[in-house]
Image 1 (spheres, rainbow, N blue to C red):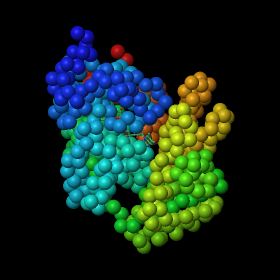
Image 2 (image 1 turned 30 degrees about the vertical axis):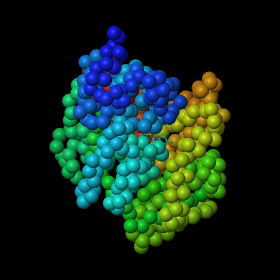
Image 3 (image 1 turned 90 degrees about the vertical axis):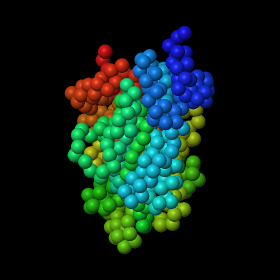
Image 4 (image 1 turned 120 degrees about the vertical axis):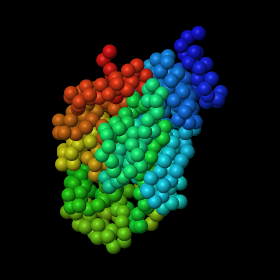
Length: 460
Ligand SMILES: Cc1cc2nc3c(=O)[nH]c(=O)nc-3n(C[C@H](O)[C@H](O)[C@H](O)COP(=O)(O)OP(=O)(O)OC[C@H]3O[C@@H](n4cnc5c(N)ncnc54)[C@H](O)[C@@H]3O)c2cc1C
Protein backbone atom coordinates (compact mmCIF):
# COMPACT_ATOMS: atom_id res chain seq x y z
CA UNK A 1 0.00 0.00 0.00
CA UNK A 2 1.35 3.50 -0.79
CA UNK A 3 1.94 6.10 1.97
CA UNK A 4 -1.19 8.11 1.18
CA UNK A 5 -3.48 5.08 1.45
CA UNK A 6 -1.73 4.03 4.66
CA UNK A 7 -2.23 7.48 6.13
CA UNK A 8 -5.87 7.51 4.93
CA UNK A 9 -6.55 4.18 6.66
CA UNK A 10 -4.89 5.35 9.90
CA UNK A 11 -6.89 8.58 9.86
CA UNK A 12 -10.10 6.56 9.38
CA UNK A 13 -9.16 4.70 12.55
CA UNK A 14 -9.12 7.99 14.48
CA UNK A 15 -11.97 9.97 12.86
CA UNK A 16 -15.54 9.24 11.79
CA UNK A 17 -15.96 8.31 8.11
CA UNK A 18 -17.42 11.70 7.21
CA UNK A 19 -14.45 13.52 8.79
CA UNK A 20 -11.83 12.19 6.37
CA UNK A 21 -12.06 12.26 2.60
CA UNK A 22 -10.23 11.87 -0.69
CA UNK A 23 -13.27 13.05 -2.66
CA UNK A 24 -12.01 14.89 -5.77
CA UNK A 25 -14.46 17.82 -5.46
CA UNK A 26 -13.42 18.43 -1.84
CA UNK A 27 -9.73 18.12 -2.76
CA UNK A 28 -10.33 20.75 -5.48
CA UNK A 29 -12.06 23.06 -2.96
CA UNK A 30 -8.90 22.91 -0.83
CA UNK A 31 -6.50 23.44 -3.74
CA UNK A 32 -6.70 27.24 -3.84
CA UNK A 33 -7.10 30.49 -1.98
CA UNK A 34 -8.53 33.80 -3.23
CA UNK A 35 -5.33 34.76 -5.06
CA UNK A 36 -3.92 34.23 -8.53
CA UNK A 37 -1.42 31.59 -7.32
CA UNK A 38 -1.66 28.27 -9.19
CA UNK A 39 -3.94 25.72 -7.44
CA UNK A 40 -2.73 22.28 -6.33
CA UNK A 41 -4.77 19.57 -4.61
CA UNK A 42 -3.94 17.87 -1.28
CA UNK A 43 -4.10 14.05 -0.96
CA UNK A 44 -6.55 14.00 1.93
CA UNK A 45 -8.84 16.49 3.69
CA UNK A 46 -9.81 16.01 7.35
CA UNK A 47 -12.40 17.81 9.50
CA UNK A 48 -11.46 17.43 13.19
CA UNK A 49 -13.95 18.29 15.93
CA UNK A 50 -11.57 18.67 18.88
CA UNK A 51 -7.98 19.48 19.87
CA UNK A 52 -7.51 15.81 20.78
CA UNK A 53 -8.43 14.81 17.21
CA UNK A 54 -6.04 17.41 15.78
CA UNK A 55 -3.28 15.94 17.95
CA UNK A 56 -3.96 12.43 16.62
CA UNK A 57 -3.98 13.66 13.01
CA UNK A 58 -0.68 15.49 13.56
CA UNK A 59 0.86 12.37 15.12
CA UNK A 60 -0.06 10.30 12.05
CA UNK A 61 1.45 12.96 9.76
CA UNK A 62 4.59 13.15 11.92
CA UNK A 63 5.00 9.36 11.87
CA UNK A 64 4.84 9.21 8.06
CA UNK A 65 6.55 12.59 7.43
CA UNK A 66 3.47 13.77 5.52
CA UNK A 67 2.80 17.54 5.09
CA UNK A 68 -0.09 19.25 6.90
CA UNK A 69 -1.82 22.43 5.76
CA UNK A 70 -4.23 24.07 8.25
CA UNK A 71 -7.25 25.59 6.46
CA UNK A 72 -9.76 28.19 7.72
CA UNK A 73 -12.00 29.39 4.89
CA UNK A 74 -9.18 29.79 2.36
CA UNK A 75 -9.61 33.57 1.97
CA UNK A 76 -5.88 34.29 2.14
CA UNK A 77 -4.20 36.06 -0.73
CA UNK A 78 -0.63 34.77 -1.05
CA UNK A 79 -1.08 31.06 -1.72
CA UNK A 80 -0.91 30.25 2.02
CA UNK A 81 -3.21 27.21 1.94
CA UNK A 82 -2.19 25.74 -1.39
CA UNK A 83 -0.67 22.30 -0.65
CA UNK A 84 2.14 22.30 -3.20
CA UNK A 85 3.72 19.32 -1.39
CA UNK A 86 0.33 17.54 -1.18
CA UNK A 87 -0.40 15.71 2.11
CA UNK A 88 -3.23 16.39 4.58
CA UNK A 89 -5.30 19.57 4.68
CA UNK A 90 -6.88 20.11 8.10
CA UNK A 91 -10.13 22.03 7.60
CA UNK A 92 -11.28 23.64 10.88
CA UNK A 93 -14.92 24.17 9.82
CA UNK A 94 -16.29 21.78 12.46
CA UNK A 95 -14.29 23.40 15.28
CA UNK A 96 -16.59 26.42 15.28
CA UNK A 97 -17.77 26.76 18.87
CA UNK A 98 -17.67 29.91 20.97
CA UNK A 99 -16.53 28.27 24.20
CA UNK A 100 -16.87 31.09 26.73
CA UNK A 101 -17.69 34.81 26.86
CA UNK A 102 -16.01 36.35 29.93
CA UNK A 103 -18.05 39.51 29.69
CA UNK A 104 -16.51 41.34 32.65
CA UNK A 105 -12.94 40.43 31.65
CA UNK A 106 -13.59 41.53 28.05
CA UNK A 107 -12.35 38.14 26.88
CA UNK A 108 -13.73 35.37 24.72
CA UNK A 109 -12.57 31.80 24.17
CA UNK A 110 -13.23 30.29 20.78
CA UNK A 111 -12.35 27.35 18.59
CA UNK A 112 -10.32 28.27 15.47
CA UNK A 113 -13.12 27.70 12.93
CA UNK A 114 -15.36 30.45 14.39
CA UNK A 115 -15.63 33.29 11.86
CA UNK A 116 -15.42 36.96 12.80
CA UNK A 117 -19.06 37.64 11.84
CA UNK A 118 -20.27 34.60 13.80
CA UNK A 119 -18.39 35.90 16.85
CA UNK A 120 -19.74 39.44 16.52
CA UNK A 121 -23.31 38.18 16.22
CA UNK A 122 -22.91 36.40 19.57
CA UNK A 123 -21.00 39.25 21.26
CA UNK A 124 -23.72 41.77 20.37
CA UNK A 125 -25.96 40.08 22.97
CA UNK A 126 -23.42 41.16 25.62
CA UNK A 127 -22.90 44.71 24.27
CA UNK A 128 -19.42 43.69 23.09
CA UNK A 129 -17.64 43.45 19.75
CA UNK A 130 -14.48 41.91 18.26
CA UNK A 131 -12.60 44.62 16.42
CA UNK A 132 -10.50 42.97 13.67
CA UNK A 133 -12.43 42.98 10.39
CA UNK A 134 -10.65 41.80 7.23
CA UNK A 135 -12.77 42.12 4.09
CA UNK A 136 -13.62 38.40 4.08
CA UNK A 137 -15.62 36.57 6.78
CA UNK A 138 -12.44 34.74 7.77
CA UNK A 139 -11.94 32.29 10.65
CA UNK A 140 -10.29 33.47 13.85
CA UNK A 141 -7.71 30.67 13.50
CA UNK A 142 -6.80 31.89 10.01
CA UNK A 143 -6.81 35.52 11.14
CA UNK A 144 -4.42 34.74 14.03
CA UNK A 145 -2.23 32.66 11.71
CA UNK A 146 -1.88 35.59 9.28
CA UNK A 147 -1.91 38.41 11.88
CA UNK A 148 -4.86 39.89 10.01
CA UNK A 149 -6.07 43.45 10.44
CA UNK A 150 -8.76 45.63 8.97
CA UNK A 151 -10.52 48.96 9.01
CA UNK A 152 -10.46 49.45 12.80
CA UNK A 153 -6.79 48.63 13.43
CA UNK A 154 -5.82 52.31 13.55
CA UNK A 155 -7.77 52.53 16.85
CA UNK A 156 -7.99 48.98 18.28
CA UNK A 157 -4.90 47.27 16.90
CA UNK A 158 -4.26 44.21 14.73
CA UNK A 159 -4.88 40.52 15.46
CA UNK A 160 -1.61 40.23 17.42
CA UNK A 161 -2.88 42.88 19.86
CA UNK A 162 -6.05 40.89 20.60
CA UNK A 163 -4.53 37.47 21.36
CA UNK A 164 -4.12 36.66 25.06
CA UNK A 165 -3.61 32.93 24.66
CA UNK A 166 -3.53 30.24 22.00
CA UNK A 167 -3.77 26.50 22.40
CA UNK A 168 -1.45 25.02 19.79
CA UNK A 169 -0.82 21.45 18.65
CA UNK A 170 2.87 21.36 17.83
CA UNK A 171 4.27 19.31 14.89
CA UNK A 172 5.15 16.42 17.25
CA UNK A 173 1.61 16.31 18.68
CA UNK A 174 2.36 18.11 21.98
CA UNK A 175 -0.31 20.61 23.07
CA UNK A 176 0.83 23.93 24.58
CA UNK A 177 -0.66 27.25 25.69
CA UNK A 178 1.21 30.32 24.51
CA UNK A 179 -0.17 32.84 27.04
CA UNK A 180 -2.77 33.33 29.77
CA UNK A 181 -5.82 35.46 30.55
CA UNK A 182 -4.00 38.27 32.37
CA UNK A 183 -4.08 41.78 30.91
CA UNK A 184 -0.28 41.90 30.97
CA UNK A 185 2.62 39.55 31.62
CA UNK A 186 6.41 39.77 31.69
CA UNK A 187 6.80 36.03 31.97
CA UNK A 188 9.00 34.25 29.44
CA UNK A 189 9.38 34.68 25.68
CA UNK A 190 6.30 36.06 23.96
CA UNK A 191 4.98 32.91 22.30
CA UNK A 192 1.64 34.55 21.48
CA UNK A 193 3.49 36.85 19.12
CA UNK A 194 5.50 34.00 17.65
CA UNK A 195 2.48 31.89 16.76
CA UNK A 196 0.38 34.85 15.57
CA UNK A 197 1.48 35.33 11.97
CA UNK A 198 3.17 31.92 11.76
CA UNK A 199 0.82 30.90 8.89
CA UNK A 200 0.42 27.29 10.01
CA UNK A 201 4.17 26.67 9.73
CA UNK A 202 4.79 26.01 13.45
CA UNK A 203 1.63 24.21 14.58
CA UNK A 204 -2.16 24.11 14.51
CA UNK A 205 -4.08 26.66 16.58
CA UNK A 206 -6.91 24.77 18.28
CA UNK A 207 -8.25 27.40 20.70
CA UNK A 208 -7.95 31.19 21.03
CA UNK A 209 -8.52 33.56 23.96
CA UNK A 210 -9.16 37.00 22.51
CA UNK A 211 -9.69 40.52 23.76
CA UNK A 212 -13.05 42.14 22.95
CA UNK A 213 -14.40 45.69 23.39
CA UNK A 214 -17.62 47.35 24.56
CA UNK A 215 -19.77 48.58 21.68
CA UNK A 216 -19.19 52.37 21.68
CA UNK A 217 -22.00 54.54 23.04
CA UNK A 218 -22.05 56.65 19.90
CA UNK A 219 -20.71 56.11 16.37
CA UNK A 220 -20.46 58.60 13.51
CA UNK A 221 -19.31 57.57 10.04
CA UNK A 222 -18.40 59.88 7.20
CA UNK A 223 -17.29 60.14 3.62
CA UNK A 224 -14.93 62.89 2.46
CA UNK A 225 -13.91 63.38 -1.17
CA UNK A 226 -10.76 65.14 -2.37
CA UNK A 227 -9.36 66.47 -5.67
CA UNK A 228 -6.39 64.07 -5.54
CA UNK A 229 -5.22 60.95 -3.67
CA UNK A 230 -2.32 63.08 -2.37
CA UNK A 231 -4.72 65.52 -0.71
CA UNK A 232 -6.66 62.64 0.87
CA UNK A 233 -3.48 61.06 2.28
CA UNK A 234 -2.20 64.42 3.54
CA UNK A 235 -5.54 64.92 5.33
CA UNK A 236 -5.14 61.53 7.07
CA UNK A 237 -1.60 62.37 8.22
CA UNK A 238 -2.75 65.76 9.58
CA UNK A 239 -5.74 64.16 11.36
CA UNK A 240 -3.51 61.58 13.05
CA UNK A 241 -0.88 64.17 13.92
CA UNK A 242 -3.59 66.34 15.50
CA UNK A 243 -4.37 63.43 17.84
CA UNK A 244 -7.97 62.90 16.68
CA UNK A 245 -8.88 59.41 18.02
CA UNK A 246 -10.23 58.18 14.71
CA UNK A 247 -11.59 54.60 14.74
CA UNK A 248 -11.48 53.96 11.00
CA UNK A 249 -9.95 55.83 8.07
CA UNK A 250 -9.92 54.13 4.70
CA UNK A 251 -8.76 55.47 1.35
CA UNK A 252 -10.62 54.53 -1.83
CA UNK A 253 -9.40 56.06 -5.10
CA UNK A 254 -11.65 57.18 -7.95
CA UNK A 255 -11.30 53.91 -9.91
CA UNK A 256 -12.28 51.91 -6.84
CA UNK A 257 -15.25 54.19 -6.09
CA UNK A 258 -16.46 53.58 -9.66
CA UNK A 259 -16.35 49.80 -9.06
CA UNK A 260 -18.19 50.26 -5.75
CA UNK A 261 -20.92 52.34 -7.37
CA UNK A 262 -21.43 49.68 -10.06
CA UNK A 263 -21.45 46.77 -7.59
CA UNK A 264 -23.39 48.28 -4.67
CA UNK A 265 -25.63 50.58 -6.74
CA UNK A 266 -24.38 53.58 -4.77
CA UNK A 267 -23.93 57.04 -6.25
CA UNK A 268 -20.81 58.19 -4.43
CA UNK A 269 -18.87 60.96 -6.15
CA UNK A 270 -16.12 59.33 -8.24
CA UNK A 271 -13.26 61.15 -6.55
CA UNK A 272 -10.51 59.98 -4.19
CA UNK A 273 -12.45 59.43 -0.98
CA UNK A 274 -11.82 58.78 2.71
CA UNK A 275 -14.29 56.63 4.62
CA UNK A 276 -14.08 57.69 8.28
CA UNK A 277 -15.55 56.56 11.58
CA UNK A 278 -15.44 57.98 15.11
CA UNK A 279 -16.34 56.10 18.31
CA UNK A 280 -17.09 57.67 21.70
CA UNK A 281 -19.71 59.66 23.56
CA UNK A 282 -21.87 62.30 21.89
CA UNK A 283 -20.18 65.52 23.10
CA UNK A 284 -16.69 64.11 22.47
CA UNK A 285 -17.64 63.00 18.98
CA UNK A 286 -19.14 66.39 18.09
CA UNK A 287 -15.79 67.94 18.85
CA UNK A 288 -13.82 65.26 16.90
CA UNK A 289 -16.11 65.60 13.88
CA UNK A 290 -15.89 69.42 13.81
CA UNK A 291 -12.12 69.33 14.16
CA UNK A 292 -11.81 66.75 11.37
CA UNK A 293 -14.03 68.87 9.10
CA UNK A 294 -11.59 71.76 9.53
CA UNK A 295 -8.58 69.56 8.84
CA UNK A 296 -9.98 67.97 5.68
CA UNK A 297 -11.12 71.39 4.40
CA UNK A 298 -7.50 72.56 4.69
CA UNK A 299 -6.59 69.73 2.31
CA UNK A 300 -9.12 70.68 -0.37
CA UNK A 301 -11.93 68.33 0.69
CA UNK A 302 -14.79 69.04 -1.71
CA UNK A 303 -17.59 67.17 -0.01
CA UNK A 304 -17.99 65.62 3.43
CA UNK A 305 -21.10 63.73 4.51
CA UNK A 306 -21.66 62.23 7.97
CA UNK A 307 -24.04 59.43 8.88
CA UNK A 308 -25.20 58.63 12.41
CA UNK A 309 -28.06 56.35 11.39
CA UNK A 310 -27.19 52.65 11.71
CA UNK A 311 -28.49 51.60 8.29
CA UNK A 312 -26.70 54.41 6.43
CA UNK A 313 -23.46 53.63 8.29
CA UNK A 314 -23.73 49.94 7.49
CA UNK A 315 -24.30 50.76 3.80
CA UNK A 316 -21.17 52.90 3.76
CA UNK A 317 -19.00 50.21 5.34
CA UNK A 318 -20.53 47.48 3.21
CA UNK A 319 -19.36 49.49 0.19
CA UNK A 320 -15.82 49.50 1.59
CA UNK A 321 -15.85 45.86 2.71
CA UNK A 322 -17.13 44.54 -0.61
CA UNK A 323 -14.60 46.49 -2.68
CA UNK A 324 -12.43 43.48 -3.56
CA UNK A 325 -15.56 41.57 -4.59
CA UNK A 326 -16.68 44.63 -6.62
CA UNK A 327 -13.44 44.36 -8.65
CA UNK A 328 -13.86 40.57 -9.05
CA UNK A 329 -17.49 40.92 -10.12
CA UNK A 330 -16.62 43.70 -12.57
CA UNK A 331 -13.93 41.59 -14.32
CA UNK A 332 -15.32 38.12 -15.02
CA UNK A 333 -12.70 35.49 -15.93
CA UNK A 334 -9.87 37.48 -14.34
CA UNK A 335 -8.06 36.94 -11.01
CA UNK A 336 -7.08 39.64 -8.58
CA UNK A 337 -3.49 40.51 -7.73
CA UNK A 338 -3.39 42.63 -4.59
CA UNK A 339 -0.28 44.32 -3.24
CA UNK A 340 -0.05 44.87 0.52
CA UNK A 341 2.87 47.01 1.65
CA UNK A 342 2.89 49.10 4.82
CA UNK A 343 5.16 52.13 5.26
CA UNK A 344 5.79 54.72 7.98
CA UNK A 345 2.89 57.17 7.77
CA UNK A 346 5.12 60.05 6.54
CA UNK A 347 6.13 57.91 3.52
CA UNK A 348 2.56 56.99 2.58
CA UNK A 349 1.76 59.83 0.15
CA UNK A 350 4.98 59.19 -1.81
CA UNK A 351 4.39 55.43 -1.82
CA UNK A 352 0.87 55.77 -3.21
CA UNK A 353 1.97 58.28 -5.86
CA UNK A 354 4.78 55.91 -6.88
CA UNK A 355 2.29 53.01 -7.13
CA UNK A 356 -0.07 55.01 -9.36
CA UNK A 357 2.80 56.16 -11.64
CA UNK A 358 4.09 52.58 -11.93
CA UNK A 359 0.62 51.30 -12.83
CA UNK A 360 0.28 53.99 -15.48
CA UNK A 361 3.75 53.29 -16.91
CA UNK A 362 3.00 49.57 -17.13
CA UNK A 363 -0.42 50.26 -18.67
CA UNK A 364 -2.21 48.41 -15.87
CA UNK A 365 -5.71 49.46 -14.98
CA UNK A 366 -6.43 49.02 -11.29
CA UNK A 367 -7.48 50.66 -8.06
CA UNK A 368 -5.69 51.94 -4.98
CA UNK A 369 -7.22 51.59 -1.56
CA UNK A 370 -6.20 50.85 1.96
CA UNK A 371 -6.12 51.18 5.69
CA UNK A 372 -4.23 54.42 5.32
CA UNK A 373 -4.33 55.32 9.02
CA UNK A 374 -1.87 52.44 9.51
CA UNK A 375 0.27 53.32 6.46
CA UNK A 376 -1.04 50.15 4.76
CA UNK A 377 -2.43 50.35 1.22
CA UNK A 378 -3.27 47.97 -1.63
CA UNK A 379 -3.10 48.20 -5.41
CA UNK A 380 -5.67 45.85 -6.97
CA UNK A 381 -5.29 44.75 -10.58
CA UNK A 382 -7.47 42.17 -12.28
CA UNK A 383 -5.37 39.94 -14.50
CA UNK A 384 -5.93 37.41 -17.25
CA UNK A 385 -3.90 34.40 -16.13
CA UNK A 386 -3.52 33.29 -19.77
CA UNK A 387 -1.89 36.56 -20.76
CA UNK A 388 1.82 36.20 -20.01
CA UNK A 389 2.60 39.85 -20.61
CA UNK A 390 -0.11 40.95 -18.19
CA UNK A 391 1.16 38.46 -15.58
CA UNK A 392 4.66 39.81 -15.99
CA UNK A 393 3.40 43.38 -15.59
CA UNK A 394 1.46 42.49 -12.43
CA UNK A 395 4.57 40.86 -10.93
CA UNK A 396 6.65 43.85 -11.90
CA UNK A 397 4.15 46.21 -10.24
CA UNK A 398 4.18 44.14 -7.05
CA UNK A 399 7.98 44.12 -7.02
CA UNK A 400 8.33 47.85 -7.62
CA UNK A 401 5.84 48.61 -4.86
CA UNK A 402 7.62 46.29 -2.40
CA UNK A 403 11.08 47.66 -3.29
CA UNK A 404 9.84 51.20 -2.73
CA UNK A 405 8.39 50.29 0.68
CA UNK A 406 11.45 48.33 1.84
CA UNK A 407 13.78 51.15 0.86
CA UNK A 408 11.81 53.43 3.19
CA UNK A 409 11.69 51.24 6.28
CA UNK A 410 8.39 49.54 5.42
CA UNK A 411 7.35 45.92 5.07
CA UNK A 412 6.41 43.75 2.07
CA UNK A 413 3.14 42.76 3.77
CA UNK A 414 1.10 44.81 6.21
CA UNK A 415 -1.61 42.22 6.81
CA UNK A 416 -2.02 39.52 4.15
CA UNK A 417 1.12 37.62 5.13
CA UNK A 418 3.95 35.91 3.29
CA UNK A 419 2.51 32.61 1.99
CA UNK A 420 4.50 31.79 -1.10
CA UNK A 421 4.04 35.17 -2.81
CA UNK A 422 6.20 37.22 -0.46
CA UNK A 423 8.90 34.63 0.34
CA UNK A 424 11.33 36.15 -2.12
CA UNK A 425 11.45 39.40 -0.08
CA UNK A 426 12.10 37.80 3.32
CA UNK A 427 15.89 37.92 3.18
CA UNK A 428 15.89 41.49 1.94
CA UNK A 429 13.45 42.58 4.65
CA UNK A 430 14.84 40.64 7.61
CA UNK A 431 18.55 40.12 6.84
CA UNK A 432 20.18 37.93 9.50
CA UNK A 433 16.95 37.84 11.51
CA UNK A 434 15.65 35.44 8.86
CA UNK A 435 18.24 32.91 10.07
CA UNK A 436 16.77 33.20 13.58
CA UNK A 437 13.34 32.43 12.12
CA UNK A 438 14.81 29.42 10.27
CA UNK A 439 16.29 28.14 13.53
CA UNK A 440 12.91 28.46 15.27
CA UNK A 441 11.26 26.56 12.41
CA UNK A 442 13.92 23.86 12.53
CA UNK A 443 13.61 23.51 16.33
CA UNK A 444 9.83 23.17 16.29
CA UNK A 445 9.29 21.40 12.98
CA UNK A 446 12.51 19.52 12.06
CA UNK A 447 10.73 17.31 9.53
CA UNK A 448 9.18 20.42 7.91
CA UNK A 449 5.70 18.93 7.85
CA UNK A 450 3.76 22.06 8.85
CA UNK A 451 2.68 24.01 5.76
CA UNK A 452 6.05 23.33 4.09
CA UNK A 453 7.78 25.89 1.87
CA UNK A 454 5.56 28.75 3.01
CA UNK A 455 6.95 31.76 4.88
CA UNK A 456 10.23 29.93 5.63
CA UNK A 457 12.14 27.60 3.37
CA UNK A 458 14.64 25.45 5.25
CA UNK A 459 17.77 25.05 3.18
CA UNK A 460 18.37 21.33 3.70
C1 LIG B 1 -12.13 40.11 -0.26
C2 LIG B 1 -11.01 39.92 0.69
C3 LIG B 1 -10.65 40.95 1.52
C4 LIG B 1 -9.62 40.77 2.45
N1 LIG B 1 -9.32 41.80 3.28
C5 LIG B 1 -8.35 41.63 4.21
C6 LIG B 1 -8.06 42.67 5.13
O1 LIG B 1 -8.64 43.75 5.11
N2 LIG B 1 -7.11 42.44 6.06
C7 LIG B 1 -6.45 41.24 6.14
O2 LIG B 1 -5.62 41.06 7.04
N3 LIG B 1 -6.69 40.25 5.26
C8 LIG B 1 -7.63 40.41 4.31
N4 LIG B 1 -7.90 39.40 3.43
C9 LIG B 1 -7.11 38.14 3.49
C10 LIG B 1 -7.72 37.03 4.38
O3 LIG B 1 -9.10 37.23 4.59
C11 LIG B 1 -6.99 36.97 5.71
O4 LIG B 1 -5.63 36.60 5.49
C12 LIG B 1 -7.59 35.99 6.71
O5 LIG B 1 -6.95 36.17 7.95
C13 LIG B 1 -7.49 34.51 6.30
O6 LIG B 1 -8.35 33.75 7.13
P1 LIG B 1 -8.92 32.34 6.63
O7 LIG B 1 -9.82 31.81 7.68
O8 LIG B 1 -9.48 32.46 5.27
O9 LIG B 1 -7.58 31.51 6.61
P2 LIG B 1 -7.00 30.59 5.43
O10 LIG B 1 -6.88 31.38 4.19
O11 LIG B 1 -7.76 29.34 5.38
O12 LIG B 1 -5.54 30.32 6.01
C14 LIG B 1 -4.62 31.37 6.12
C15 LIG B 1 -3.33 30.87 6.77
O13 LIG B 1 -3.59 30.52 8.11
C16 LIG B 1 -3.26 29.16 8.36
N5 LIG B 1 -4.28 28.65 9.28
C17 LIG B 1 -5.63 28.64 9.12
N6 LIG B 1 -6.22 28.12 10.21
C18 LIG B 1 -5.22 27.79 11.08
C19 LIG B 1 -5.17 27.17 12.36
N7 LIG B 1 -6.28 26.83 13.02
N8 LIG B 1 -3.96 26.93 12.92
C20 LIG B 1 -2.81 27.28 12.30
N9 LIG B 1 -2.80 27.87 11.08
C21 LIG B 1 -3.99 28.12 10.49
C22 LIG B 1 -3.27 28.49 7.00
O14 LIG B 1 -2.43 27.36 6.95
C23 LIG B 1 -2.76 29.62 6.12
O15 LIG B 1 -1.35 29.67 6.18
C24 LIG B 1 -8.93 39.55 2.50
C25 LIG B 1 -9.28 38.50 1.64
C26 LIG B 1 -10.30 38.68 0.74
C27 LIG B 1 -10.67 37.54 -0.15
